[in-house]
Length: 213
Image (cartoon, rainbow, N blue to C red):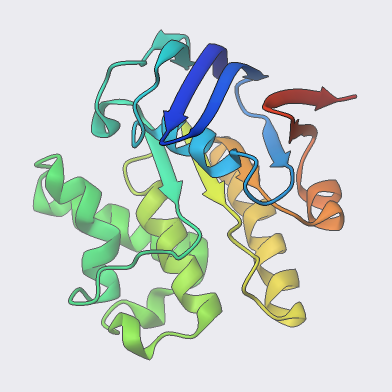
């Protein structure tokens, strides 16, 4: 579950006030709106990457407004994927679990589970520079899912893919949502993408978020 209540955000001269959003546990939601309207800023606030100036953020029924990112139970895939250039795929998938001091056998098992879920078992020893766009996106998604988050935030994850890869990744996101039950909030500019993937649609305009019924 994601609930934003009276959220205020400020970045230089850019301000947002009174942001409200509620997405039920296990739902797949999309957030749409024009470039520069603040969608990514809101997503970063949910993840704990941007401090809020007011209001509360609840995830899974917990007030996480002042918690650091690692304690929020959120997985995040930024628009540029941000893979670590010096780590092979196996290490990318293990990263969040290593940070949490999980035992090596637990990490190894989880990496294998993720690789199977995302169809990247054959890529585990490959460096990021040797991945295609679609492969890199799968790795970024796996890294975000590694610690089994309750909430997954996706910032335009399919925007840079060609038509064939876009269709493939839509199918993968549907599969991941079905298999994990994670609550997903996905930023997109594509109405067709939103219609296919999400059961809950939000639109951001004029500094407000409205739910489309």
